[in-house]
Length: 133
Image 1 (cartoon, one colour):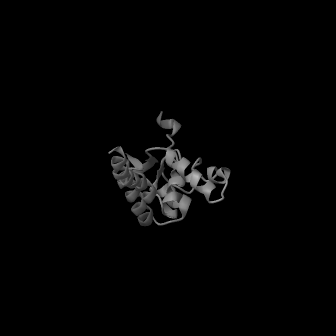
Image 2 (image 1 turned 120 degrees about the vertical axis):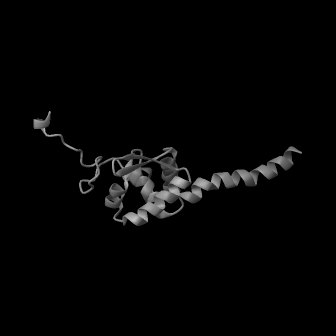
């Protein structure tokens, strides 16, 4: 009887395991996750980092949010996205190794810096003039 339960649960477990893999399976979504990295990024930051249009990025962000991979927070007119679980970066790095790439080559691509051409508050902090203090 336990063998029958195992046979029934294996397809169900496989479906559950596939959900996040399917959600990040496209190269574009992997690039977005790497651009967000262990920190957070707004759409304008992703536009600058990836060179893609806002509407295109937003479609992928929506799919990643629906798959429960990203969470967001609003700061004024900006929405910042972050990974709900940084294990996705480990998964991407493991996949890169399976593809023959080094973990080091991937780690250098993960978001660790600001983009000077991005105008969000994360990249261009608001300076308060000394005279107003």
